[in-house]
Image 1 (cartoon, one colour):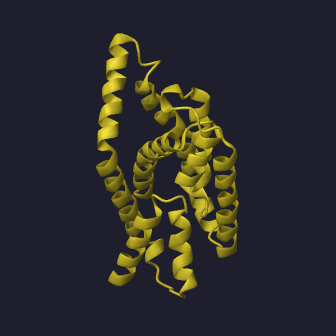
Image 2 (tube, one colour):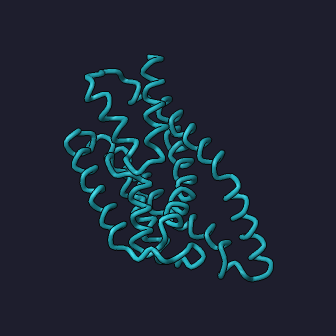
Length: 208
């Protein structure tokens, strides 16, 4: 049990921040090696995985969040929040809503219906194609300072697709950002900032 927990924790740590779907690998890895342990289906372990991911995300991006909130509150005072990065706080909140609503309503259905290895492999292949096309054909010229509400919502709906195992949350949101014309680094930054409330919400949801 301890070895299984360590192994799955390592898989989660490696795959969570790469565009390769951590949930897919947590299902496929035990299946490939014929492991029949029930740890991956344990509520406490699931919460622990989400909590560990949240701590790692906050530890890395705390300066970004501190800076964003500083610009947000300063922008409210001087009226400039509509034209600088301070509005990203609003965009992150709004982009989180689609995944939050769909997660509350369909998470258990998806988890029970989409755990078939063939379906997961198909999702991985399909998203790989989406990622390639988004990087190959997007303009990659815009910065986050020019982000629009429509693009934020579009990325938020893309994030909701990550409820399906095999659809990488970071992969699909970065691809949506690239498809909207943003530079690679800006699309990736918004994707990982967007992950913070989603991961926190998922951990809380697992507790209920």
